[in-house]
Structure formats: C-alpha cells, structure tokens
Image (tube, rainbow, N blue to C red):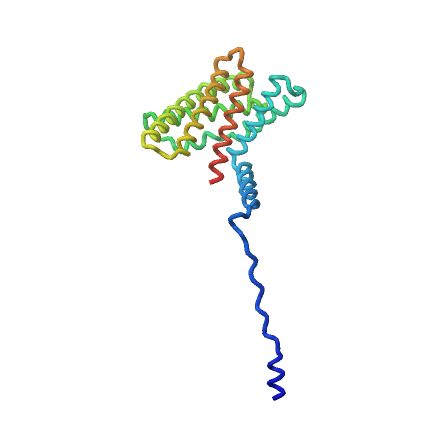
Length: 230
C-alpha cells in the first residue's frame, strides 16, 4: 500500500523540449555566399590565367591613371612595369601546348597552331631580352614577330567566335552562352585594338592601349569569374 502511494506521487519523466522552429524561407544565409566568393577569388589566384588577368586589369588601370596624370608617375609607373614583367614571366612556355597538338599535315588547323608556336617562342625571347639574357636587336625582332602573330591569332579567334555566336542564335541557344560569346568577341576586339597599336604605332597609342588593355583584362577576368562560380 505504501509502495502504491509513493509510486502515485512520482513525477512523470519530462518530455524533451520541442525543436526550435526555423523559418528557412525568411532566413538569410550569408556565410555560404561569402565562402563561394572567397573560393572564386582563391581559384583565380591559383590558376595561371586568373593571376594573369587580375594583374593585367590592375596594370592597365594604373596606366589609365598615369596617362591622365591622376597619380604620380615616379612610383606607379615602376609598379605597372613590374606587373608587365611578372605577366611575361608567368606566360613563359606557352608554345608547349600547341607544339604537342601539331601534326605533320598541311591544313588550316596546322597553320594556326604553327602561328601560336611562333607567337609563344617570340614572346619568350622578348621576355628573355627584358631580363637581360638576349640582345636588343634580337629582342626587338622577336617583339615585332610576336605582334604580327598575335594579330593573326586574334583575327582567327574573332572569326571562330562570330561563327559560334551565329550558330547559337540560329539554334535559339542558351542566353547565357550567347552572352558569353558576345563578351568574348568584345574582348577580342579590345585585343585587336591593342595589338594594332603595337604594329602601326598611331599617335594615340598610349591612351588606346591603356583603355583596350584594361577592358580586355576586365572582360577576360569576368569570364573566368563566371566559369569558376559554376
């Protein structure tokens, strides 16, 4: 009887508290977006092309400011030159890629690859000239050859991109792909302006190359940003 009275006064086992309600619809998740942003920047810095385009954008932005005398030339011109030299060193050996793809066949594709190889080798020779390993006469010739080869490559790339854009538009392709194709064409046109200034040396070369180089780097960096964010 006493045991029954004791058991009747024992409190029941408390139930666990309810889980806190979370309204995922209204909740703003900031951390994942920040992580994605950091990862994209990290990959841009990790990839060779990403580093090159970031430095190119900064380099020509400095040149724009220098051209309009918005900053002092004494310090900033040296920095722009260092960015240029660093980019040349980073691009050493680019001829290896097309050299592995080339085949002993006389066709259009082989000619384009051969142009890329000559462009890459002449770029390397000019870089070695800037480093002091090659004479001025050889370095100057390499710079001229590189400019003409690059211009030929740009014109070929513009042709390919225009054909791809027309194909996408005919087939009602993805709007994002059409947009990126248009960005690529504009970027190549900026490269063409820059390279034409190297070949023909017009009186407005300084301003034209500063602006075209800046927009070329910016658009190329934007394309990489989209690519790495997917």
